[in-house]
Length: 155
Image 1 (tube, rainbow, N blue to C red):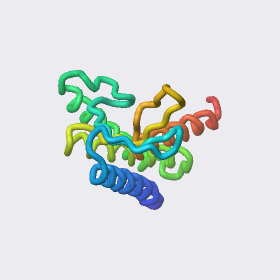
Image 2: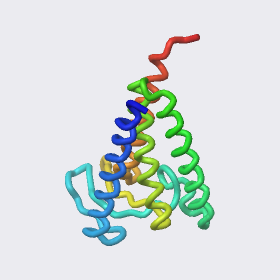
Image 3: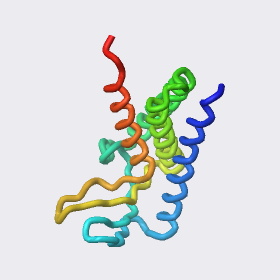
Image 4: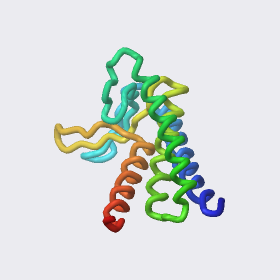
């Protein structure tokens, strides 16, 4: 069991940061509120009932349970992989970040029925979909997993 606590601690830190920042946004902003920070960045309070980039957000409600189930399966599989490959640092860093992000968004989906997004970047009239700390951790984690896959020898 040596080593796995490090990876689960990283995931726990991501979950804590994600939930805390979402809590701050929910306390400070009403739904739809936008606060300009720079010419290319705003803090907002949006609710995403779908998946990444609001995929299936208008699907009628079934998507909440679908994405909840997918998240639960991902948490179980990632936990297994961290335990099995705990000595592979880059791989487990990526898994730990994805795990923390998945749990953070899963918590929102189960308790609120949607995911709170609040980071909103844009260039002129081109807006990137709003996202949160969990989404950021998932993206960085996936990038690390891809990087790790390219570093593996071809068999």
